[in-house]
Image (cartoon, rainbow, N blue to C red; front, side, top):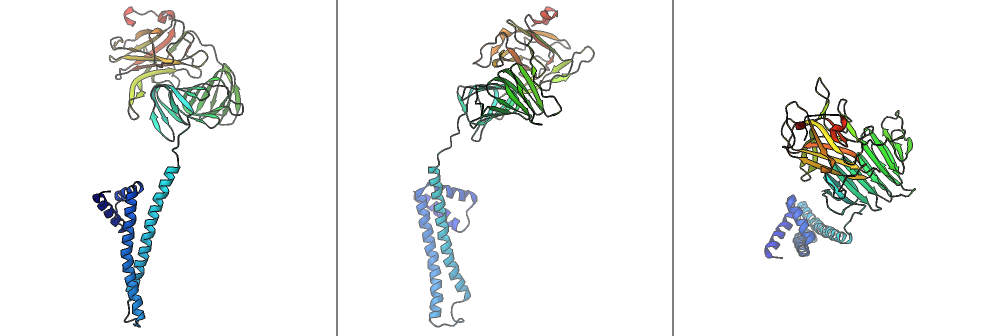
Length: 469
């Protein structure tokens, strides 16, 4: 230790005993004593010297008092009461000073021993991330991180937060169970000998390996509790309702508002809401049609994204693009596009993909803008099948005042977004179709869309050739 650092330490020691240390100086001194054995030795020597000086003063005062009385002095001639008080104060000051020094060093020693004895807590891995798309944040008791699409990211118990219509994350639990979250979603995963998922909102698809009958996998939502022994199941959670669709196996579903339970078998679905008056009864899911068409004459389901415009006169009902998050540059900066989305929800199916299908829309733009189209699919048995997209430049789309345009896109033009799922297949079932202008707000409106085998000609629609792109 240098003479300069010795001098600075002695200044801090002196200020400490005089009660003149600022908070930053006190923190710096504590840290120095904790990490520097030489500084602790110097501190002890300083306190001993300081105490000896005060002890000498206290002893001198006490001897003066004692010698005065031994000499037979009268109280009037002997030491005053102030002399006695000063002697007592000096003695107690020395004792307190040494006690403080000992306490400081003891606390530092205990802290050092505890740090050496306590191993770093390493959270247990319960899952591995297999793919990530869009804005996905993982939050646990130990960390918060923005997940990126790379191989084998280990997860402990914690919460997955997805932001944006096209966000998705697939995780594999230790027993091989696959869980897939898509869209705006939040789910807490844990495993204490029993797998537990708390799905606060969003869409969850799970391919669950056989579980112990004594400890089935448990999924909880704001309105339901679902026990899963081994199945392919899709759950959609909203604040006031939960829908369950079973593609294989079976699950037990309990409605939280009244505790009623039902068993949901393969190819069945059920909805549990906050209204105990509603019937809690599974129903068979209908076979998906090989073509699908959607208009906007009526208000759309609440989970569809866009501003609905009712039909007026010659103007059809339509959806106008609204701001939506499609990713994050970092944990603080969202990437915002303007889009319209439709989702498979309870009571609204988006059909299944034909062998050589075409996605088409009736749309219009107020300003030239590139257009992005994303399609998310499940396999025919309910498992996740991938997300796919195509981007069209602003020269491809058409801006024509008050004129609706038809756009046909062969499904083969859509490219995979998740490397593990490189291709769509005949019979895949769309769960999400998203249209966005991805540079600015182009004033996108959509009046009609669909997926058919031969495009709009299959529907008997004929448009001038220059209206098709």
